[in-house]
Length: 480
Image 1 (spheres, rainbow, N blue to C red):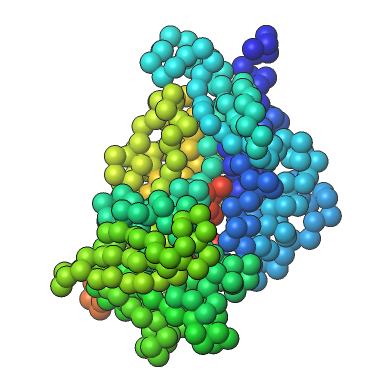
Image 2 (image 1 turned 120 degrees about the horizontal axis):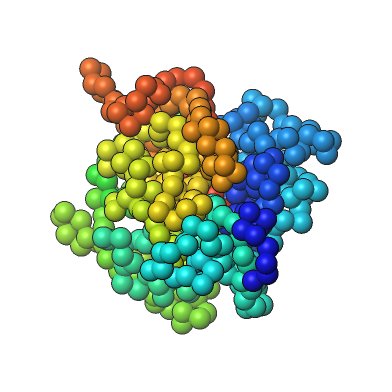
């Protein structure tokens, strides 16, 4: 390492998705230098992977203030605030121009996967002088070359897109699941059924596993494909006992796009176009036909257990819409304080635990709540919610504004956390929200305090993208 003082070193941002790029924009606004690591070939690569999905929230909730300040001098034309973008439009009309701004373009390293974060000369057991020691961020490019970078602080906004939850029970892969995934018989969580991935599904039997927005989007796309290709079969497996719990409140659901999603799905099921299997726990996947290395025409047998006995389904593809979890493997040398249940920062975990809080509204929070024992290290964006599903993109923007202020030494600004996030049914992990209570009951609003769990006005975008989605609400990455 050179003689450069720690204060002169850049701020590392892991992930060039919506929240990561917003963090970098705030770093620039504070006259510090960002260094952004992006695993993909382009900024916002994960968002591009689900670009065919439409967001439920309009543009006015999707743009960070510091990012806007970088974009406006370039002649960028801000999209209509009331229109609903797709993931692809989020990239082309906002994230790609943002990444191309003069201040940011030279700071982003694509094809650069962070494989370790530590302190220079200190593993996690060494305490003396730790807070004054620069971070060491180790990255690997697509050619396998490894490089060490010395930085002042680290903001991990890498999201959860690359670490989906397994299909099996107890948080573990089902027997044979890894082999089926390697053979291409288990797809990505949000395949482009009507576009680039159409050939995988047309005229074949697809099993969708899950009961949230990711499942709904895929089922609806398969239903549309079935209209053009009548031999296409669709099966849907869920752990719950009633698909009606997934549909939501129809016309009573706000925003309108969310209610329409549940209504369309209900119609497909009631028309018999989707075979529904409830209360199923998947126990195994077995490939038959061609070898796993040549699985184009292979068939997959999916075994499961139910309260009434074992079930077995023969399908061509399985779409896993079972949610996501954070990748903590490259943070082993960092001192983290994580909630033992959802793997979010310890102070945040109880506020977002989906066992108790299905609504996405969480009291606005910033650097203090997101801090770890490792000074100047933060996890932000979708990854900050760990395994919880109800992350809001606007929440991520406020997180990184506060975090960067804290890193810059402006504690007053870091502590002044204000964010108006009125709740609608859009916030829930499933299409059916805990806000859809029966008459005479009151939703649990303790986590959100006075924020208003089940309001009916604004519609901030909720995403679960691991380089954030920070995945559009309708994408709902890692939320099922």
